Amino acid sequence: MKEPSMEKLLLMAIPVGILVSLALYFLAQILTITNLDMIRIQFGDFPIIIEILLFLGGFILFNVVIVVLHELVHAFCFPEGLASKHVGFGFHKNGAFFAFYTEDMSKVRMLITMLMPFILFTMAPWLVIIILDKNLPLVMMALMYHALLASGDLVGLYLIIKNTPRHSVLKNKGYFTYYK
Image (cartoon, rainbow, N blue to C red; front, side):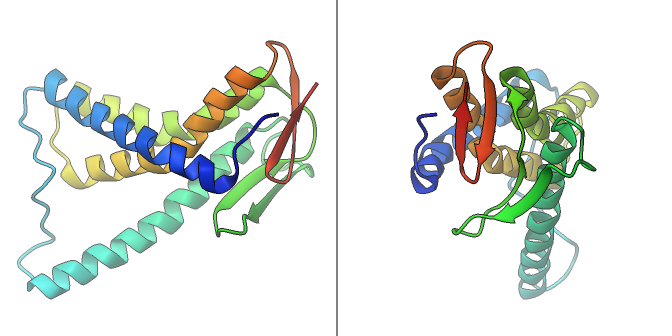
């Protein structure tokens, strides 16, 4: 399949992630009564240096947890599920953690697999926040951040839709995707 290098994919994904995050924010502003305040986040009455350290520590922990959960959801959606001997995990040379499936997969299954973490960790919780009309700044920032992280999957989704025939079967071999 015609695919950009990982570096080009990331460059394509950044504006997509920013646009999706902004769209989520503005949709919440339009569809809720509460004035959503996502700028002012406080951990308590701690000195500013402690608040910064708490934020950075939480951010690092959040990154590790969300990336692992995100990739586990991909793996769970692969044919045969997470326990399959054909499912594996790895690190790209740029440090990105990823899940992979070594056997053939239908195009529809691949699209669902790519989209599911975005649905579970961004869209569904965001809709709950809008429906409940809650102002949860830290949660909302985390959801927007996940949208940014999932933007590579969204670009990949577009590339698969655009570059493969309708009823094709796909297979990943390392970073590259093949179809028949």
